[in-house]
Image 1 (cartoon, helix red, strand yellow):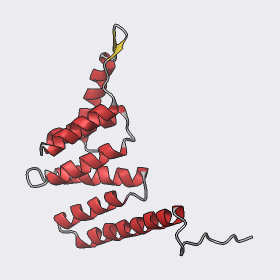
Image 2: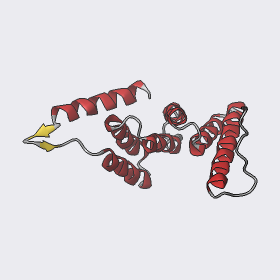
Image 3: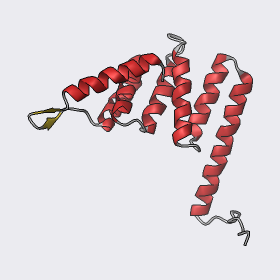
Image 4: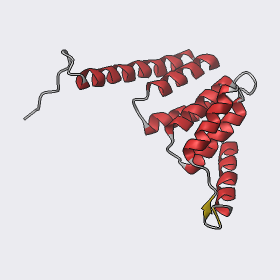
Length: 157
């Protein structure tokens, strides 16, 4: 994340730490609640507010993959108003790939971002990764349904 994102998250964590318990009542919002807030803001096309809510989600749960998806998509949607957000979109999508290496949507998002930035070669590379991840998903689905055509690799023994 950018230093602005880090600062926002740090301020939120500090505030949350100061108000964690008051009279035995936990005041830190649940990650799911914060994520839903971000989705609501996204649906209202309040891109930067949605990004802030998704950042708060990550302050509670740093591996909340859907929050990274939210940041990537909201930053991408806000690109015409604030092109600098594309860098944060890239960071978020790459974090998804780190956490879930076969996430087709993360690769597709990266491809879209690089198309918009005019970097065709990088866009094609991420697009190819999206296709491979999609094929893997399909193979796993076929295997789980026992569909003919999927063969387990033979043992080398």
